[in-house]
Image 1: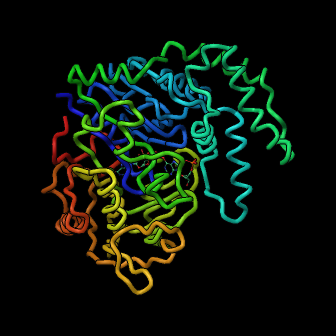
Image 2: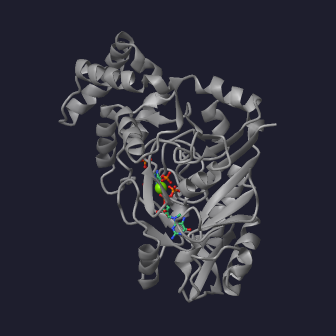
Image 3: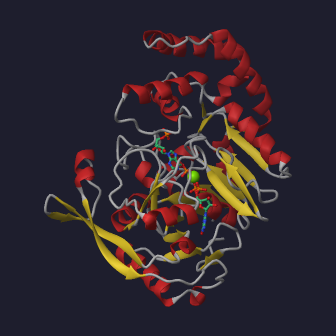
Length: 427
Ligand code: GDP
Ligand code: IMO
Ligand code: MG
């Protein structure tokens, strides 16, 4: 039997999925990204240096791993080429990369549409990363999309662009924007196709073959469960499903192939972009957390909003992902916080609830109910085992386990690969 592990974000993204994927990749053989695009920003720290990835799976820094960008991704080919060159220039040349011919291409007009759609929302923009993700998935769903495989044939590409731009160009005209030229885009994107051709393949066939060969396969999540198009705080979400449930669909494998699901969770919460965030607070403690955790977006540089850990969110994430273990990240950042809060339920119009209401207005009205735990002052960044952690820190971790009903399998006490305490061996 192949050993498979899905790494999934349980909150609003930026939980530390990149760090955990890079860490687990050392003992895996294959690393797969299956949805989203370069809206993701995954920071990985080793050898005193930070490396940021947006499209490439976080297996590329481990020697000789197979890295797969699967069917459900939306890929900006220029950004991909730049990222491959950057990683190779940093001295990492030994990865094998495969890109699905079914993945959709983020076209230049998707970037323009992303900005346009945000401006139409006036005082309620989503706060997207402006990477064209929503419009690329919109074209995919409405069957106007262009897939990676289409970049290989110029005539086919021109035909597809004619259809797609006959829809979008009139819109640009209406809003006083410059229309896009089919010829110029076809020329540029065909050239990108030629540059990335060596990586393009049917990754579904490849992945199923690797499963049959009983390989160790790691699926790297992007975004977080609360940004899920179906199960997040709609409409303040991304345009794909970042859940473990979506992995088989987006990678072209059977659901039964998924065994373990690691729910990556910050020891507190953060959110970038707009949308309700019940446990958010903004005071000196939040500022301290933002500075110590360097809570600024990897993709956009925006300061991240800060909140306490939210047990309702984590229970929701457990239900929709089938989480088998939690990885608690950035625990070191809470050092020095006198009292730490955990939200265990919400109050909505006088009623106590333990689920995420579907209606966004209801979700905006929920009031978090907290349990408070005494903090600790000890520096955790050199802790090598669970037993070395201060008692108040252990009490806090136990409370998270009790409130969420999930066991903690990994604890992260710093950004470096070495600053990881593993309580369960995944591979
Ligand atoms: P991702 O999108 O889920 O991969 O997360 P990001 O990389 O966007 O954000 C997580 C940030 O936290 C990055 O800057 C990481 O280097 C950093 N990080 C991860 N784990 C830890 C940790 O345990 N402690 C500290 N201090 N930083 C961490
Ligand atoms: P990683 O993989 C945090 C957020 C955006 C915005 C919403 C929609 O690094 O965890 P989009 O550009 O996807 O249409 O934006 O989703 N968002 C993320 N927030 N981490 C991410 O990825 C995100 N990807 C998208 O800020 O609120
Ligand atoms: Mg990120």
